[in-house]
Length: 122
Image (cartoon, rainbow, N blue to C red):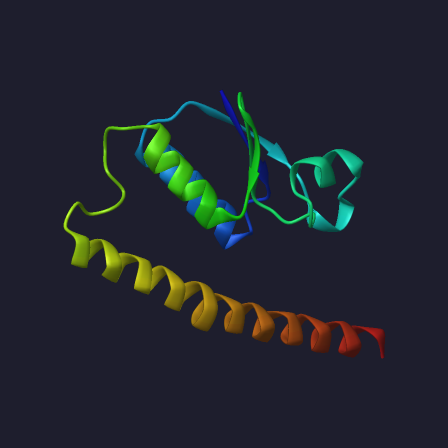
């Protein structure tokens, strides 16, 4: 059985969780916050990043690699279109969201939180 490690505020964690649910893959969840990563976490995710999964074959990190593993290891409801151009457009959208939307939004959120913390300290 797969164990999904991470925490639900992460868009990447939710991306993997949604794929597992969509394909009806049995899994458990284990809360891991990257700021509290210990040696056990680093053994499964060398950079201490979340999400990562634990499988009978070993650990796997990086959400897109996990998604590709889930798609290949659990046939059934396809997450990737069969038609090559449609599959490429899907990957294009994933890259756009990951690099140009999610990372920018995270930076803005971090700045906003830092500003709120500074106001509260005054």
